[in-house]
Image (cartoon, rainbow, N blue to C red; front, side, top):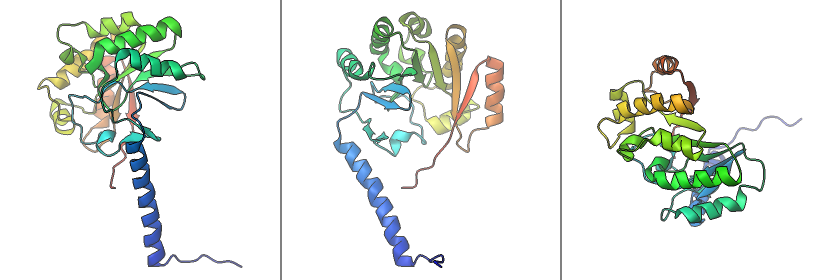
Length: 235
């Protein structure tokens, strides 16, 4: 009979070393692979059109990884709108996609005009559901524009707004926004969005956030709440 074998210390260290080297090798591969403007996860197709963002969230995935699922999301430069459409055209009809989502290593509303033009192209040629994942600061980034109305008219159907805090003090602490009135602007954006589009708020389950208070905020605003698991990075 074969019994359980205790792993010796040197074997344990070897296993850890193999795991570490694998992770480092994957990170190296993503750095060496060309940046991805278009990538996919499951049944959703994603657009990574900028790496700019007015927030500096301590828990942001891009602080710890160069990409996801083998896709390098660190852009060397922002793609021109026509180039992004060209890349999208290579894969959008290759299989069934539930949604096309503007979400990458930056805030997509940093490039509102690019986003609108691509959305119009998607709706005209393929009629896909288009979602924008945003930090909700689109009106601060595009002062004087009716961002929600423009999104709706272009064909955006869904908004997913990252709230990640139950009050302004917590938001400023965990998200470190460039704009002083960012939290208030996010709440206003959610209110505007829910009147025109299918809108949800999301929260990463970091320890600083009081989830019960966020649930109550979502209930009062009349929007869905989606929790996103916080995975600490220790390597």
